[in-house]
Length: 131
Picture 1 (tube, rainbow, N blue to C red):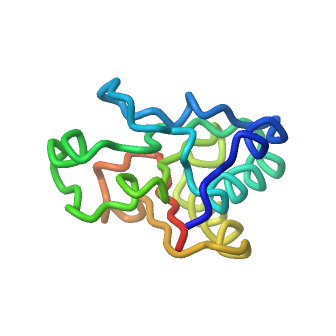
Picture 2 (cartoon, rainbow, N blue to C red; picture 1 turned 120 degrees about the vertical axis):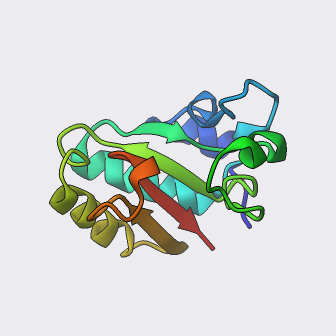
């Protein structure tokens, strides 16, 4: 894993580490997000407009409290984010398009979203993770 460095964050004009904080409010070191994840999200923001991180890093305690989350979540490893892009993520077709575009970039591992009711807990968000 290549963590974002202080210099990487300074150069990145699209995201701030605070956008990736654990929802429980703990100090989960969002500044240590995976470089390739932030890079993919930056590509998405450049193409589609503002990207809202609905969930970035999670501490293990918060992750364990979520119904349906897996023990070895990539959120805990700083290698996953759930995102929402207004207009794009509001339709199944848009979410599928976003995932297809994200697959093009170095480091991409996996993505999923609510298509056909298969992940209803995701709502209109898209989960993206990197190797």
